[in-house]
Length: 200
View 1: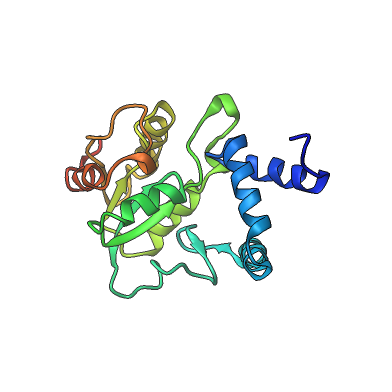
View 2: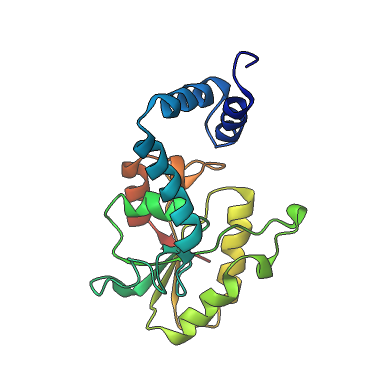
């Protein structure tokens, strides 16, 4: 690192903060950007700035969106009677890539975790109950991760919806306890969705 000018070292350090990138990967990416045509580096910078300025959350399900609604919520072909509840956008993407689920989603943006002071008000649970009241929902599929926090969140959702006229199911688990949906292969996720069971 000593051989690099300060501005290059600064860029390497910033890239190194990105998940999954170590020092060597950050260094390679930095050198690539330095050697790339100026327009390529500028278009990358512009795309990042545009995402940060213009990207918002869907007002209905809290997925990523460019306007009021995300592409899934605004798709008239989706089954509006099923809502799949996930912890993160990455989990939604993983399920969506299987092509097996044709309903809508609800992204909590976290899971209940008292140790880290993440309570019901810190994730989008109230909005889920409001959707069940407001929309023609017949089934809520809980697809929180098979972790301690995911299980606590799943049981809390079940309690919230116990007096509602809605079927509550939990995805089947070929997904191991402690696993993370976004890292599971498509076939396993497909089987988990198809093998969902009544949640009690």
